Length: 119
Length: 107
Image 1 (spheres, each protein chain N blue to C red):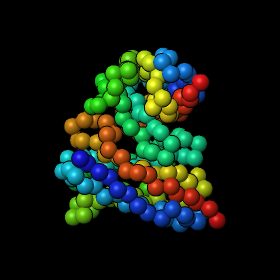
Image 2 (cartoon, one colour):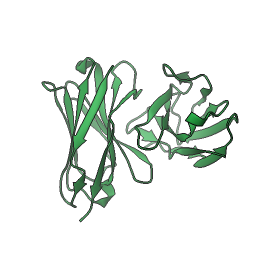
Image 3 (spheres, rainbow over the protein chains, first blue to last red):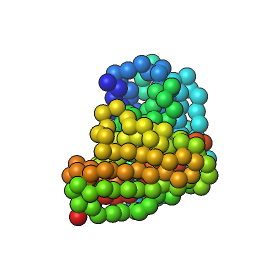
Image 4 (cartoon, rainbow over the protein chains, first blue to last red):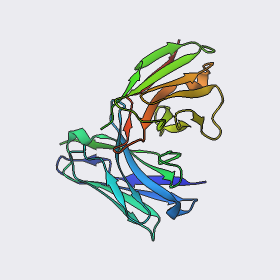
């Protein structure tokens, strides 16, 4: 059974860089696309972007803070970096995965990492 | 971006009652729509994909319908464990976008 375990700093000051990691276990790493999705304190869900096992990325152009999603195939991990964060980036961040043949069926999710941006 | 308008934002229903949620897309998304259930403190759980196909293990009291711009999610007989927030999500085009959510509460 595929499992996603995520971690990262939960409290940041404005202008700092958000950095989260998601480790994938229990399945073929190359068989999935890996995504980051965040949920605001009000409950709204926002897609941040995705990466394939080979490193091909797509990002949400609506995000105001610069985003980088990367992959470390040697560790079966993906990472999210959000630069110059503001209070608007306060949210719970989820990594989520879908099998490459299934087309955005997010069957697999990490446990979520709450992130607060405050001075 | 494709806007997803979900209604109502909240509802109260009794156990055994039929619950219906609607989701409207700002443009034609064919049937590229997922429905998720989320309980407090947990990640969303996929219930329905391709607008009407139940994911593995999802009880048959859940159903989805629609195509194009208008979609419906139904719980035929609400159970206590169905108390949660439900979200629609389109995947016809990037960026992926979600509806605002419907909080289902117990009456």
